[in-house]
Image (tube, rainbow, N blue to C red; front, side, top):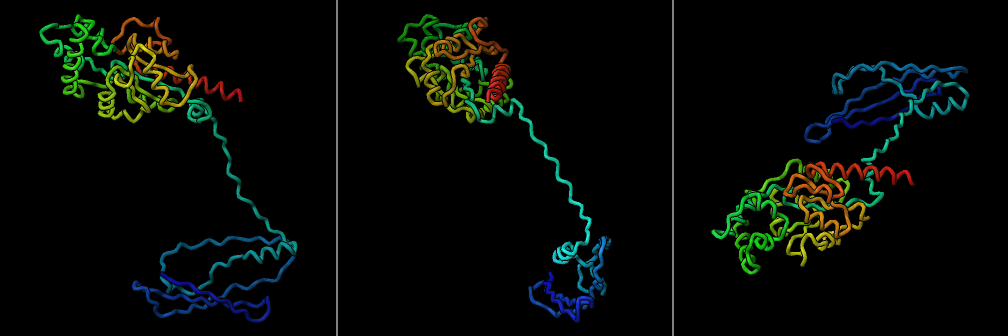
Amino acid sequence: MFKWKRSHKTQGGDEKAATLESTFEKVDSSGEYGASEHIELKEEPVYPRTQGTIELKEEKKAPLESTSTNRPQGVFEQEVSREIIEQKVAEKEVFELKPEPSPQVIMPTTSPAAKLDSGDHEKYVLLFDLDGTLFDSIDGIYHSFTHACGAAFSPTIDEVRSLIGLPLVEMFIKVGFEPKEAQDRAIAYKNHYRKIYLQETKLLPNVIESLIMAKSFAHLGVVTTKTALYSKHILQHFDILRFFQVVIGSEDVQHPKPSAEPILKALCSLPIAPKEQVFMIGDTIYDLEAAKNAQINGVWVRSGYGMGLESRAMMSCDGVYEAVCAIRTQAMQYADNWHTLE
């Protein structure tokens, strides 16, 4: 490294050449100063001032080949200082100064999708069922149900499929068990289910993409007749619990779906939104009835265990991805109309 010191000595009047003395002091790798080398450099003479146009031509700089201080003596490029320029302008000498062109400013356009994320209006609220909506869980449910029934009853997988969405005790009552015995069967079901439910549960297609999209314009929650404990474990297992702000399970309410209670309880934990912007997405009649009782929009997905429910839903879609896309399209139209009212 070099330490640069510079001093000026002026001899005689303004028209005489000025001597510039410059000193480079070497610093070795230990940080100590070594011997100084003096290089005497002469500036080019300043010419007499004349009226008219002064044309300044840039000299081409030779490329630096070395940082050594043992450079040959020569003429350094002379810089025109600010003071000299100001002085010559005052004496009405003309400088042709071309300003640099201003960068072109391109104003961004706002798309309806960007308006959804602007935060200028209320976000939507999307509530999701689990079994048949986000998860394909028929294997674990069926094996646990038949295990709990034992020798007393051997249901087919279609019979069990038609019962999904009901609370466990009601599922066993539906196949002929008395209420007290149905409670015991439900306990046997849970004891078996907790051993296999992670291995025998699969995400339905495009669920993660759906939740990423939904999170961009809505607050998300889960409303299920599963216990919240199992629900959170499954959601965490598939790394999607992070998308949801609330999970309401069977132990959180006195009256499960089709009652409005689980939906209303979930909404108490989420930001307020107009009911037109609140949706319950599920696959069974119990999801749609709960949405109707809570006076919100019910969306039926055909990917699950319900059949022929188009007439009972505000919207019907093949799966959760299509449902979220349809709701997002509505949200974009709403955002576009909302901004035009400003």
